[in-house]
Length: 620
Image (cartoon, rainbow, N blue to C red; front, side, top):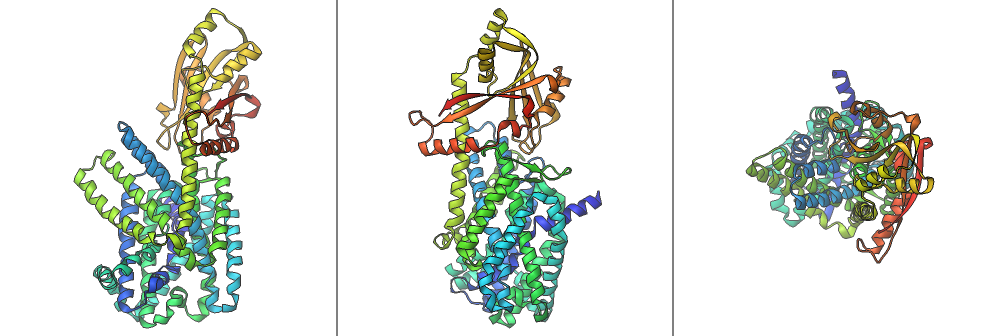
């Protein structure tokens, strides 16, 4: 047990904390040079104090202690949190709708973060070559693109394998940056006075509005906090908490304060305080280590994007895509090829468009702080309605966290015209796609229900006028147990036969990660060898219909897969501007996504040699 915990903690260091672990590369430099700021002793003490207390209040208290408690049966991430919050207010439909909008928009912003983080992390490390070889500045962007290409190429090996590969490297990284920080702190120990929050308050008094804008740089020290929660399903709470408090947080604090000690003695080192911490003989090895570490940093948001996409598919907010499970021990470890390709393309465009970490720092912040604020709101709903917290406790905790989140968000709004528009625009596009898919599926199901025949009279008519029966079992996938599936009608109309047993199968995804054994199967006998069957799966599960059907034996309905045929209506969706529903452009977007979605048969693991698909046109 302890060995397994240690292995997972090592993997968490390699995957979860790569992002926040490389923030010392650029945070202090960007914050102390932004908007005319200069590295005076007052500014250095103030910014160090803000960084330290931001990591204590936001990462340690909010995420590691509070938010990670709001796991949805082991799964984390804003989609899992949204499902948990919605489940806690089942009797409040209006509030459920608001929570859904918040959750979808927060998830959309997370994808914007997933693009900016790999780009700024790798660029900032590669730019270290300019410290030792200024003539190689023109090679920074090409080298960055190659490194990113390699990173995304190895994703299909799986989070656990990537974590085992990256974990030891990140352990070396944290040890090295801690030692570099300790070395400089010993030379200038009074820098530790910045642990006093008074210096952070004094910073705002001295710099006024400029000090408030500096929060847009301080938030860079929190990069990866949201991915920490999103990756909880990959490693679990205990390994992530153990790694943070015992290893990652101390190393980060020591390095930040080491950079501050350096700047107190040599303000001219502000051009690259991180790399100037290292002795000249170690600068090139540090650049190489930093490049490796920033590649790993990108892994946190990439893994989080995979998990979030799988959850969005199961909850009905995303088209079905191929999902590869990469671990036999942790069900949360998945690889989504389409998301991998999408992120790669967008990250490449970000690097080519912004071309430096300074420019990208302007783009960073809005997406991640927006997601952080939405996460706080959803967690507060869970605290009130799921955990039954006292209203005053919810207000007190909410006031603290939302004051911090919204302060960071407000400070980043000024960045919109300088690059902050990029992750926002990306988030809006993803939001439009997710809401369009959800609404489109609702319209399709509504149309199918309206055009379908009532099931009970149909079965009675079959009993009165029995058609020819053929041996075997027919399973008809349907979204409505009260109407006759169109595939059944087409089969009866064209082939003039029915099977001996006919099962109307509906698959329902729950708002919990894993369905309990007792709620997996709901079987109803309809008469005349017709059965209504509902299979329930959690949003973190990979639905396997054949396997679930084999488990129906305990309910009295035995299946022989070699004697079972699956019938599925493949809808040909057509956009019709005359019908009420969505705007025409959303109708066309939905049709495009539906045509390119992974077939339901593949998603539900139905064998192709046991499947018959019958077409049906649906107008929306």
